[in-house]
Amino acid sequence: MVQSSSAVSTGHAPGLGARQIYEALREQILSGVYETGSQLPSSRGLANDLGVSRTTVTVAYEQLAAEGFIEVNQGARPRVAASLVPREASSAAPKRTGPVHLSSYGERLRGSPPWPDYLPNRLKVDFRYGDLAPSDFPALTWKRAMNAAMSQRPGRLAYDDPRGSPRLRQALQGYLWRARTLSCEVEQILVVSGSQQGLDMCARLLLDPSDNFVIEDPCYRMARQVFASTGATPVSVAVDSDGMKTELLEGITARLAYVTPSHQFPLGGVLPISRRYQLLEWSRRSDAYVIEDDYDGEYRYDIRPVPPLHKLEDRSSVIYLGTISKTLSPMLRIGYLVVPPELQGVFATAKQLLDRHCPVAEQEALASLIESGGYESHVRRVRRLNGERRGTLLAALRRAFADRIVIEGADAGLHVVVWFKDLTRSLEDVFVDEARRAGVGVHPISPLYAHETDERRCDRIGLVMGYSALTIRQIENGVRLLAGVVQRVSKGLPAQLSNKLGRDDSDSA
Ligand SMILES: Cc1ncc(COP(=O)(O)O)c(C=O)c1O
Image (cartoon, rainbow, N blue to C red; front, side, top):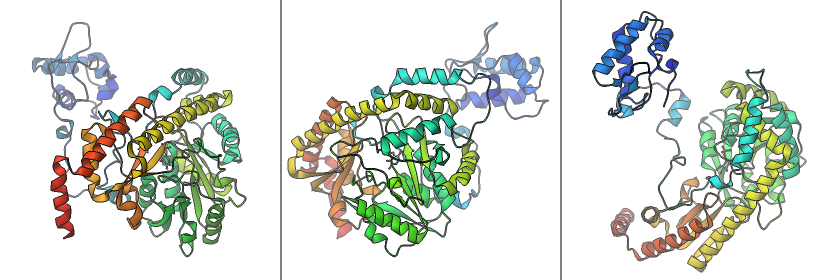
């Protein structure tokens, strides 16, 4: 890694001595700020940055070289010695002693490490939901669009509109109407850093710690967590194969309800029209906002597209949320909100305070893709590819497990839920470990339930199986390996199974 001289700035005032520079650089080398073999700043550059004489820096460099930290060659910038092994990064950071004072928000997050769904793994097949296949990404088209976007604003390096690039918002307005029959004004659209930022803004702007929020059960855990981080109280409303049981809303007081009506996450139901009206009627009576997360509305297989809630007449309380994380890439971090007119101003201010605005070049590139029709043809292509993956998965599951499983939510989206009728919940940990040993990543549905009150569901093992990152072969191989896992776990063959069951028995005794 080559660092610019400003990257080593130690924060010291001018007048710094050679000893301090030596110590700061030694610390940075040891903690891996400068990797083995990477270049340090030139003595002239660093002297300039730090406001010291070149001789002072040279003395520090000579000491580092004498101790073997760096190698100095005439006429070249010094390099970190090839033989140097940086120590563990964590041990370099000075630890504060005594209590850590956090805000009440910080306290609520303390003890909940980030959800580890970003960690890479070495499994043969991972049915992790949310990943897309790199080969599906339109790399060349995107590169061209980015190049054009980078060269389009030669005279301008300045902050942009917090609501998002006007060109992208205009393009999204047309796209939302064509793809989702949703009509809105450009002013209602806000480009955000993925749906997650949209959810975070809704949480900050609409919830106080004394409030309730309605959430599906089971649900998208990142939504539940972001709303709960405000200190507000979740009110879980059960879900069946048609989505949220809206009749249970009667009597609930809450500031907002978060729903996934086009494809309930994770169970996959599509909210019928009667429930949509029931939900909107509840929101009107309760003066609550409905957050409609349309995260994978582009993927429909055997069913007709369902217009969003936002389309219904009484939509003044609906905040619509879309994303390109399921169509282009979750790494681009681009999503969009459609907010009611009275919320436009406050959402724009919140966005500006959070991060000013989303990166402009990516927004312009996406705009040009939508304008050219390239985005929609890409969506058609990935819908077909994911339809093939889905078909392969469903066929492989039926071949391997026949009527020993129940599959839910396969009509839409990029995942299915598979319930194993013969495997009790008490075997879940063993099952996941055994699958991992066989090289297969599986992801139980149980953590997505708020309460495990639904006996029929949660007394069996249920998996959320994503397929959009896998090849046809991987899917077939993964299900084959899984069949072996199920067989071993049902027969109690894994080594640790007998211990585990022994523990469970004694727990329940
Ligand atoms: C229900 C739901 N909403 C939204 C998202 C997408 O989030 P983002 O746009 O922040 O990547 C996901 C991703 O898995 C999801 O499952």
